[in-house]
Length: 535
Image (cartoon, rainbow, N blue to C red; front, side, top):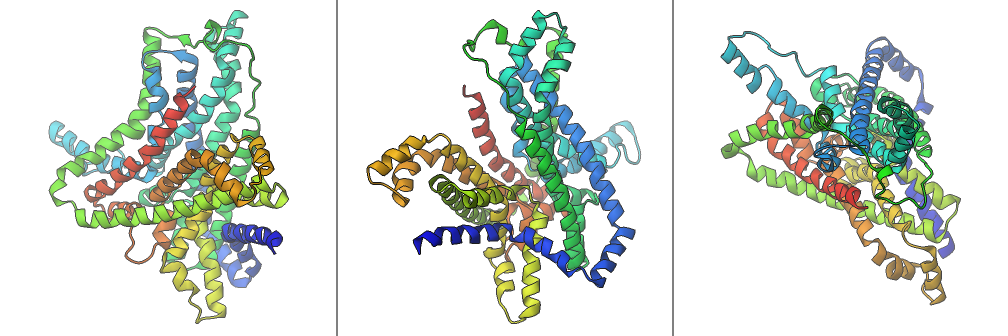
């Protein structure tokens, strides 16, 4: 019985984490004449616009994050200039800003009735709109570019830090000028990292709902919610979700392919502080350009949005809904804490099973769990609600729908599908630092099974486990698409309230929950910057 219990539990866990994707695949088995008519109508009306807008948005964001991320990574890795140490960690600050908060901040400040256009009209006697409308596809590209470029920056910086300085010096000794060294040495080194970072940024772009909904950009994610909530057409929502999932699967494959190429030989016996390995020192105008290249992304992606949100917060301080804010915060902390505890527990169990009983089953379940973060929240919502609808059609008196939609069961399930991968990656990283010889020594002393995990592994995994719980907690706090649909009644979170207030053009009231999310997001960014500064 004990021999079969662990495999059965692993299989059930894999089914629970992959059910939303399996449900979307099963929805095509019901492809009848009605579903064919729905698909045909979408192909004649909204589907071309969804596909073209999504493609345009992804291509533009890919170019933007690649240019900004690669430029900043090259500056702080290949060159020495005033403030380089500061920019190494400050360039991570936009990671703390949810993209939809950045969108609300820019809209509040730059719109027709915003303070900037009002001041320009009053000061210079202008009439009408001074700046073009920001709530469109170019505005969304701007927001996503300066919110998501740290994905490219992190990976490109890591790739360049491995060998770039040594190889750049070798190219200099061979007579190559600086421009050629960057073009033929640094860029090829960082190309796989840039590709992987762009793929991650595009996954976040496709999964976003707050920005595209607020800006009126007709992407697949916005179409899924419109088909499900506005049109009450489950077949159309399932078909759109499947198409979006196919695009995400392609990006996931490209990211995996790029990650496999992120391997470089390391030089042995070279002194870390040798002159050959030092970055090129910039002076004068070149140093000023380097400072500008690194400072502008921080200003556009973090400093200005925070200042824009502080203005209405300070102006309406006396009328802020503090009682409601405490309730929103309590709901957010409760859901995030519950999801973080469960996801971390599942990650610990999976990682220990993979360590204690390595095999195809444990490895396969861990890989399936690791893919959940790539699935957009809108796809998970449709994948969870479809089986509930099928079950209610077969057995109308079932209470499954109530437990999934009116309690925390459904929303926590969606969180686990999406964020167990985050916890699992952190725990697995901790396990890589525990030598297998410790397990052998413990077994020789009579400690096996659960005792091995509690007495040997747990003391060495505390930091990794805390990091895993923290990352899941912050991600759940900022999660919008799944929370918006599956949250229980009277359980609005900070992310949902921020979206609703901004949608109702009450941006002053949205500033308080929005800035709270930014403060929460700063915690993992600070920890990450400290880790990167460690030698």
